[in-house]
Length: 236
Image 1 (cartoon, one colour):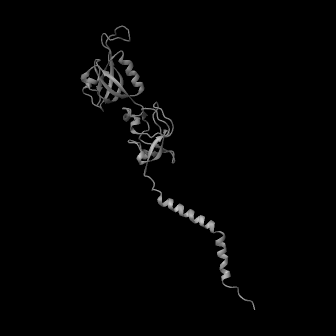
Image 2 (spheres, rainbow, N blue to C red):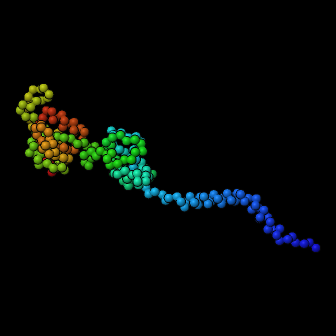
Image 3 (cartoon, rainbow, N blue to C red):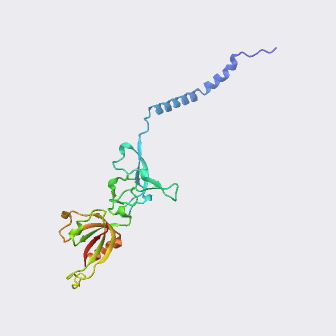
């Protein structure tokens, strides 16, 4: 009759296995303890803010486009005052994964070159005074012969600028005097941007007014200013 093996023999298998791998088990437990300690002692993530930075080296010669900018998450403690936020970023209509700042800095000029990765702030932007009236308009100073007419203008007024020659006016630099003729309209329906105070107008005759016009209109005004007397009519 066979005898059953002693019960303790059935328990020696697991014990032998544990003894064989006890060093590996101890190392694994020590590693888990170290990882747990690091996770417990590590400080929580520092709060941050997304800001707009230059996506490449930029100069001050061209208006900003959406491709010139990208966003970057920075710790709050290093975010400069006036940093531009990507909250102004809106997706383009023809692209689901491409975003451009709108209206924000797009279309504005930098007042100095910017290196790639530099945070853009409001102090870095040059806001053209004529921009609210259109991206293609420029600010043009016009010296009007009649200071009284300029005194009736305020920013936002709309004017036509006329050019007329009077007796004794020169037809060109060094040219002979020309006869008086009817005034001609040089530009029409231009918004007034600013009316400088009298002490800011300089010592020349007439009065200065700043209007918004296209570059072509600005060249026409400059040409007539050398040969004619400029006046304004007020539209509103």
